Image 1 (cartoon, one colour):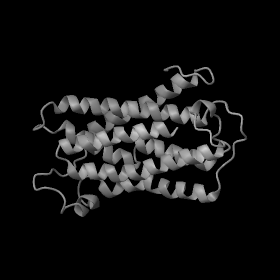
Image 2 (spheres, one colour):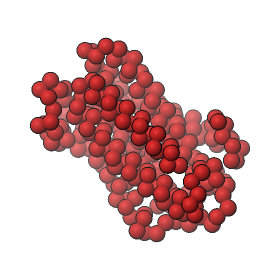
Image 3 (cartoon, helix red, strand yellow):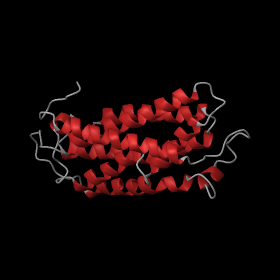
Image 4 (cartoon, one colour):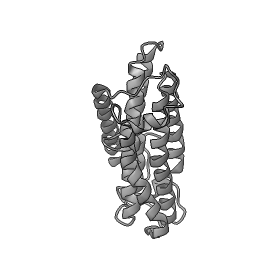
Length: 231
């Protein structure tokens, strides 16, 4: 379960680097900030799951634990939707600003192709997180240990991070009053472009993210227990 999140971090670092390539330095730092909250949340959720499943880390030996680990489950859902860029959670604002910056980076050679790759990645992100979500919490329990919720000393930090995973994106909404942009004003070069919200970019990436989640539920909802239909 933690390996999924570790490779996901590499993917999101790629998004940040793509923003730098488009000259959107503020946007890259904004995604670094939002990502810090929802990815920390997801990693701590993974730790909570491992604890509740008596140190089991294999998702194919989990499943059906949502009702027994409600706090861990719902905070994992929040972190997943934030990572997938679902409105209005934190990842929606920062990820779509990156995609919008690359889509309109006319001075960058091949920017349209890179933008398309970023869109495909948005769909893949939702697919592998939907896979982790379903295998870990849904279906029938495939393990042997008696699953239990983690103690409050572990679940309270999950809810604290979940609050930021929902709300931290609002400090960097493009346009007037972008507090994150003002905060980083001294860091950005004179040629750096201010973040702009592109409705078409946001709509396309959201549809792809939702499609990835639905596809994950379809593929893994029909799989035989304990088997991976995409080995």
